[in-house]
Length: 229
Image (cartoon, rainbow, N blue to C red; front, side, top):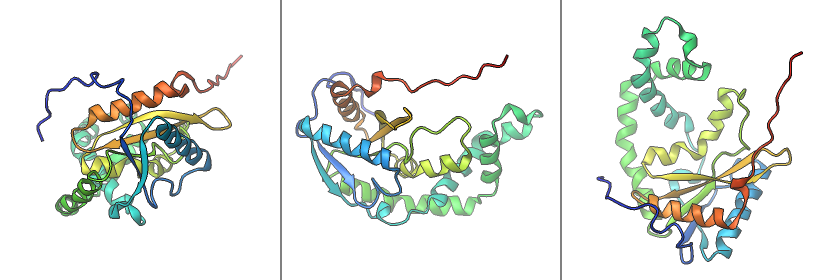
C-alpha cells in the first residue's frame, strides 16, 4: 500500500476522546509478569479517563497458544537471507554479537518451502486484523511481558518477549511503544499501541495524549556501575 503524504504532528494535541481501544481477550495479559500487567491496566484506565473507550476484542490468531517458533522462523529466514552472506564472508565472526550469530545459524536451517507456505497463510491472518479494526481504532498490549531485560539477558529471554512483537510485524501493522511504569527495582515497563495500516498518525496521537497525562517518559531507570580499583 502506498503511503499518503501526511503531517504526523498535526493532531498530536487532539486527545483521545472517542477513540476506541481494544484489549485482546486471552492475549493482552497472558503470560505477563504481574508488575507489567498492573502497569498496562493502569495505563488503560488513564486512557479511559482521557475519554477513550476501552473494550475487549477477540483475534482468533492470538486467542490460543501461539506458535511463536513458526513466526520467528520467518524472521530468521529473512534475517539469514539479508545478513548471512556478509556474516559468512567475514573472517572475524566476533564482529557479530552472540545473539546475531545464533540467529543466523538458526536461519540457515529454515527451508524456502516453509517460508513460502507461511507467506501463503499470511493473507488469512491479515484478514482477522482487518475485521478487528472495524471494531476499534487501536489495540493495547505490553511491549514485553517482562520489565526491560538486562543487557546480559539470553536469547531465550528475548524469545519470550517476541510474543507481543512478532504477530503485528507479521501482518504488517504499525505500533508504537511508550513507557507506562516501573517495577519495584526501578526497571521500566512499556506499553505497545497497535493500529491499522497507515494509521501511524493516530498512534502518535494516542501516545502523545498518554504521555501528556503521565510522567513515566521523564523518569530514568537506575544506572549501576562497577568500579575496578
